Length: 485
Figure 1 (cartoon, one colour):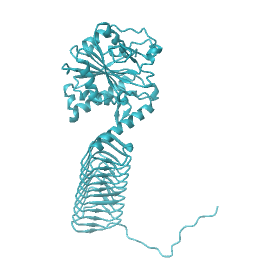
Figure 2: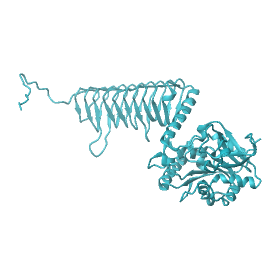
Figure 3: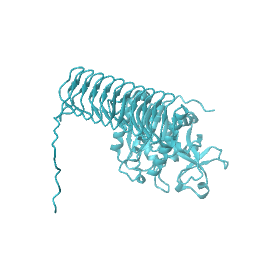
Figure 4: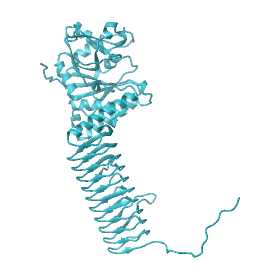
């Protein structure tokens, strides 16, 4: 039986590679899966393991990767969800230059790794390893053994083969043989090493000093520590899994796209198990966090990013893009609606009807049963209960009262070329079609603005306000005619 490991955990993440097959100027570990860099997925796993520290090995484009690491650490420290990062206020990094193999990479971490910990070695381009799997691997090591995460592949080409002490494949691990160094018999072995291991730091440091590059690739292999452990009489154990996605790395855009769909299907399955009705889980994208109440329905091709909360009975139509928003019970988001909360967020009240083809921008706060119709844009504006803007309108930097009806083609002119100004529309106002409310201006409660008016001065409560040019009709008028060429 595996014993619980009580020693501190330090995570080493290899992220020095160029990723030539990505055919991109962006370092491989910074390509995005599920809306965040591959490297961030791996760092998040370290956080969930309550690691004492994380050490990222950089190399190619190290300044770009380091900048991303700083951003990830800042977000982790300042987001309550990542409170486990409080144990360390930064993520360490070391530089591997030049890149001389996996063993050489881990050698660079020796000065920053304490001797009293368990080291978990991960790859920055392997984003979907489950935390429970990593915990099981650490427990398999028991604090005194070298533990390897392995898997059987029908086609193991390219992977290091796990050589065991007997042909049945159940004996103790004797070595890891890389593809280019394997003989014909070893190439038939289906059990492969994933690149993930757990090992006591003190033992790891000793073995790292014994590495050499006498192999087909002329590199320092981290996997050579297996033969050192065996030579020293230490037991080398394997924790074998059968989920290939957990050990799948990203080396090309094709592999990235394949893993994206695996990731999204897993998110979709989790939501459906919680009761969310997805019209088609294969056409669903979650690039942040999504919390749903009961009886939520989501149609096809919707994208959720940032932090989104959907209340009970919310219905989201097809092809919607929703970011950083709270949508209350019973609201309906019709197809092709874009909700872009960014830092200010968007709030949609209970029973509201939004869209189709509506756009809610940062700071949009909508009350109960508000209606925002087709081609209506709302930005940094508050609409009280029952307010409506059903067609072709813009409400920016505005405070809109209860039961206001904002007409088709009307806008709040909130920008004077240098500064933004606010429009206040009090309760029960009716604004006709094609009106321009030039801020700063207040439309008094119960007032009416005649269609086509440009309002530049505040209006009293209950008043009808009309501000437009006098209509002139010229009888017997003839349109100009084209001149002959």
